[in-house]
Image 1 (tube, helix red, strand yellow):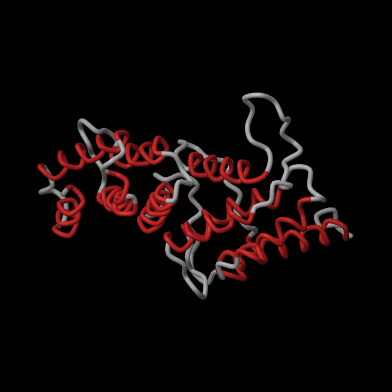
Image 2: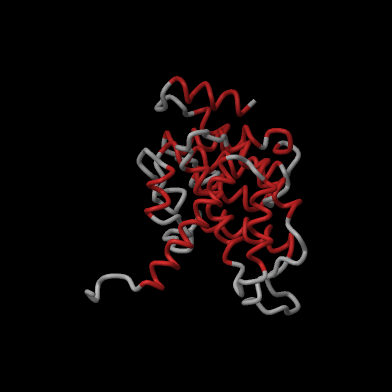
Length: 254
């Protein structure tokens, strides 16, 4: 047997990993909280590092950015699904690779799930993000017929992915799954500056989609009020954007 060929045990582990990935992605696509929570609970006792729940969180974001399933889901649907999954997370869920220390990161139950969601969302703001876990090529080829957006940063995503991720962040913020400071960081990254905002066309559309998602709480949140001031500045100098975006800015500024 050639040294380049996988051993039988490696092939078995790879097949099992692909099967798990497929099951997670299918449960997300079907918005099946019960099935996904069963997968998490079943594997919880045999994992030291809570690998499955970390895959779930990464694949949630992957599914938002790449909705080319047989049943595409909107960012709002996936955010509501994420909130439902949070409610189903048992306190017995544990990441044993993280020590329990005062002031340390959460390592069990719903707190761990919230922490992983926050970390994954924040990681897309990094200049070079190498922490996002993506499905294997085999899993992707079975579930996606189209081209996959493999970028792992907000700025690196294609226009559609940038808008979808930003809207998802807004929906998670609306549901209280992400903090206002993190939502603000997304707005700032899309605007580049509050005092002299200079978003590209795709960034401006993504920003408007995010603000539309959090509209019920945005105006009453001091940390987000400055974003609308920046949007007002864009509105006053929006002539270099296409008419559709000019209208979108006017609506979101009011």
